[in-house]
Image 1 (cartoon, rainbow, N blue to C red):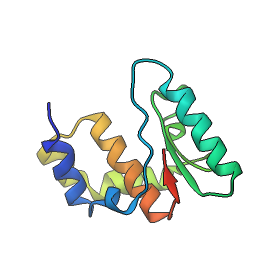
Image 2 (image 1 turned 90 degrees about the horizontal axis):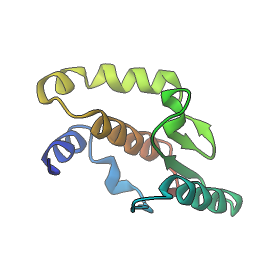
Image 3 (image 1 turned 120 degrees about the horizontal axis):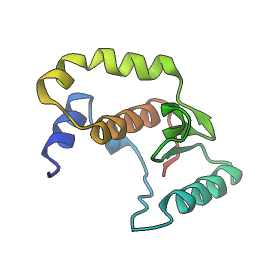
Image 4 (image 1 turned 180 degrees about the vertical axis):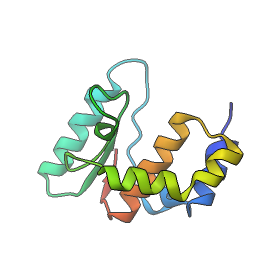
Amino acid sequence: MGLENINKLLAHIGNPEKELKAIHVAGSNGKGSTSSFIASILTESGFKVGLYTSPHFINFNERIRINGVEIPNDFVTSFMNKNNEFITRESPTFFELTTAMAFKYFAEHGVDYAV
C-alpha cells in the first residue's frame, strides 16, 4: 500500500484536504482520546471543528463529526452515489473512502480545523 489510491480519490473529488487546517494525531495508543480532547478544546474556544475517528461503536456516522454533530446520512449516501463509478473502477479501501468523505464534508462545511 502507498498513497497512490488515496491521491487519485482525493484528486477525483477536488482535493478538499488542501482547503483544511489539519491536526493529525498518530501513534499506537490514545489517538481517539487525544483527538477528542483536541477537538473539544478547539470547539470550546469557539472554532468550528471537524473530528474524524475510527472505529465507530454504534453507527458509521459517528466517525465524522463537526462540533459533535454526526455527518448526516444524506451526505454519506450522496457522496457514495456521486462517486460510485470511480469507486467501482479504482476500488479504494474502506479507510480511503471514509477519509476522503471526511475531508470533503469538512471542506464543504468550512471547518476551522480538522482533527
